[in-house]
Amino acid sequence: MRQKIIWTIVILLCSNLPMIGSTSAQFIIPAIDLECQSIHPSGNLKIDATNGSNASDYAECTVSNPNIYEEKIRIIIMSGPLNQQGPADFYVEANGEVDFQVIISCDCIAGENGTNETIDITIIAEVVEANGVPPPIYTDSESNLLADIILYEEVNETEMIISEKSDGEHSLIYAGSGSIVLLLLVMFIVSKKRK
Image (cartoon, rainbow, N blue to C red; front, side, top):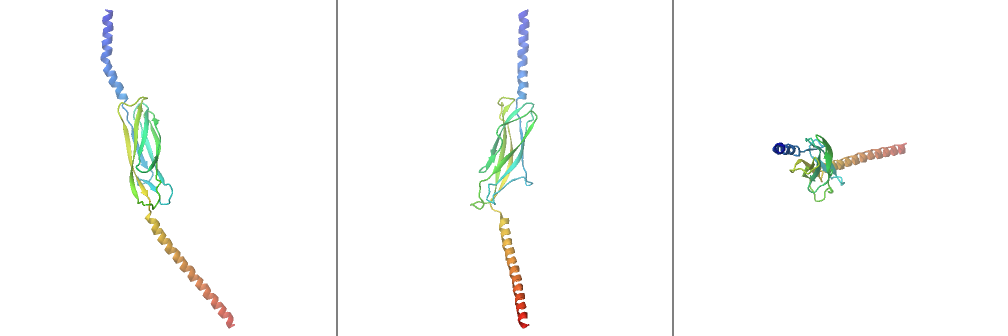
């Protein structure tokens, strides 16, 4: 009788194992949401190298964890020939979010065999740990931005022409006012000699 009771308990426990396994599996499926935005109204990053300096710009990003457990996130930035800076691995609490910045920069020199161009930037947040263990499936979220690289500013050429014209007009005004002063001086001398 005692053995029958033990076997009955063992059979009941074994019949519930798949249900326990599937319930715990639901809780360790990771999820993540990443959103990145430029600070400019155009929506694009703007890297202006026309002044010859090491130009850079940044995007504001937010990564959200919709799960009921903590996740460890890794940020990957793909920016082609541009330099990038971003956070290393970090944790996002359950149902929490973390804000961070991604900085994109260019070592380009204005006018050096370059033309203005737009480069694709991809920022990826991948889950490397879910509830303290590696996730059973690969999970990531990505955000795409564009970076406008300005190596040659056409407005500068126009401003230079306007500046040259302005300088020429000022020279004419100065030359004209100098002639008037000279004429007045000559008239003053002539009038003195007549007396």
